[in-house]
Amino acid sequence: PRPILLTRHGESRDNVRGRIGGDTVLRLEHISFEKFVISFIESLRASCYLQYCSEDQHLAFAQKCLNVNLDAGEIYAKKLADFVEKRLKSEKAASIWTSTLQRTIITASPIIGFPKIQWRALDEINAGVCDGMTYEEIKKNMPEEYEARRKDKLRYRYPRGESYLDVIQRLEPVIIELERQRAPVVVISHQAVLRALYAYFADRPLKEIPHIEVPLHTIIEIQMGVTGVQEKRYKLMD
Ligand code: F6P
Image 1 (tube, rainbow, N blue to C red):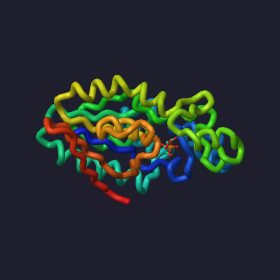
Image 2 (cartoon, rainbow, N blue to C red):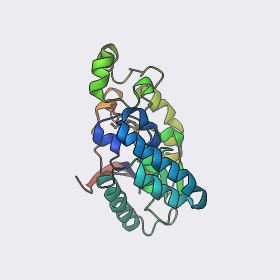
Image 3 (cartoon, rainbow, N blue to C red):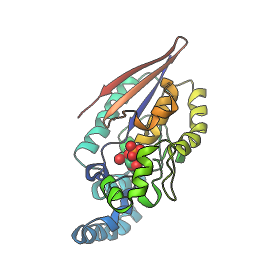
Image 4 (tube, helix red, strand yellow):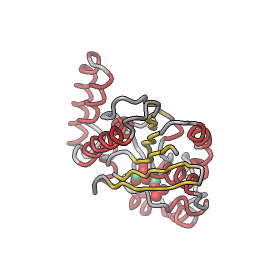
């Protein structure tokens, strides 16, 4: 049997603030003026600084100034790297798959010794016009949308965004590739996407998908063997 390890990225600032979607620098319109000025100065500094640094330094810098909650998120990234390096020590052909969003790439960055592949299909559900809002804000400003999603979370499509069904469909090539792999794969992605992937391997019904628990800072290990699928969960921190 070979394991597939599924995990969400380390906690991001948007997670802490309860904002959905997003990717690092896209948050400016939702932050206070003071924070806007700080991040504006940081991005000016970054644009000079980034001309002279490697991709790893770039990521370390992005991590510092913009996205990942430096406490919990960064600690998780390190713990995950230790776990993966121990768990997959003898698995030379293993690989690390992330989305194209900074928070998963940054979470993968402390893991060394394995190839990393970015998949757009692993990006979080696109919340369209609601991207960057909190659930409270959606409820207050777009009550019909909030209600429609509450009634049918699986089929509800965010205006100019996606539904769970859309996500499930775009994951098809990822699933085919995961099935074809002979070596272990670590998938670092996002809540909605991991609900869909997990449901596929754990054989959970479609209607349950939007409600499956996929907590932060927890690795779900799926073992694909001849006798079927086995699951273990490792909670690396709270
Ligand atoms: O809150 C984190 C997050 O990954 C959001 O970016 C995303 O919109 C959400 O989870 C998906 O979960 P739900 O479908 O329950 O809103």
